[in-house]
Length: 322
Image (cartoon, rainbow, N blue to C red; front, side, top):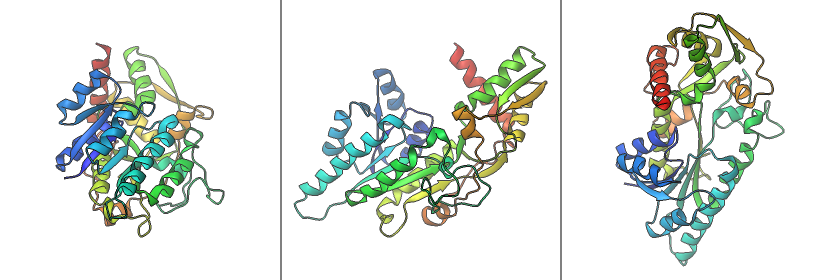
C-alpha cells in the first residue's frame, strides 16, 4: 500500500487514475477546489483535501502529517505546474533534512504531460528522444510550447524527489470530452440536418491514441515501481500509446455513429492551437513502458469501437444539458 496524493483528482484523467490506484490497494487522497467535489471523491473511496496550486497549504500539510509517499500532478495546469513542483520539492527536501543524516525514502513525484511534445513528424521517436531542445527535429505544438522546460525542472528535482513523467498519447473514452470540438460539431450538424459541416483539422494526421483507463493503469504502474526508477539509473519518462489511427477516418466514422449524413469539409487548423495539437502526427511507441513497467493496453481502437464511444459521447452531452 502506497499513500498517494493526486492533484487534478476530479478531472478527465484524475477519476480513472484514482480508480486504478484504489484497485491496486493504494491509499488515495485527492485535491479539490470545492465542497461539491469532495463528495465526488468520497464516493470513489478517495479522501478529499481542499486546496489548489494557489492555495497549497492543506495538501502540503498533509504530505507531512500523513507521510505521503507519492504526489501525482494530473492537473494539466500551465500556470500552476512550476509552483506545484516547487512546493512539493520543498516538502521533499524538508523530509530529507528532518532525517538528520539518516536514510529515508524520498518523496515521489509523478507529472503527467503528453506525447504531443514530440511535435509533428512521421520520424520514429520514443520516450528517450530529446524534446523541446534546439537539436530536436520537430518542436511541440504552440499550445504546449511551455511544457519541455517544466519537464526539465522535474528531472532536475531528482536530488530531493523520486521523479517520473507520464506522457500519454491523445486520450479517449469515458464520454470523449477531449473530442468535443469535433464530436460536438458533428452531433449538432446531425440534429439540425445540415448538408455539410466544417472542421478545423488535417485529415491526413496519423494520431497516437490511448484509452484514458489505460493511462490510469500506466501511471499506477509507475507508482508501484517508482523506487526502482531512480533517475540516475533509468530515464524516468514513459510514453503511453495503444494505437495509431488516421484523423480523417476517425472523424468520418464518428460522423456516421453521431448521425451526421452530410459532407464533412476540412479547414486549416493553423492559428487554432487546440486544432493544431489534434493535427499532430507522432510516430512513437510504448516499448519501455511495457518492458520496465509491465504496462499493456486493454482496449481496442477508437475507430473500431466508435459505436460505443459515439453513444457515450451523446449520453454524456445529454446529461450535461439537464
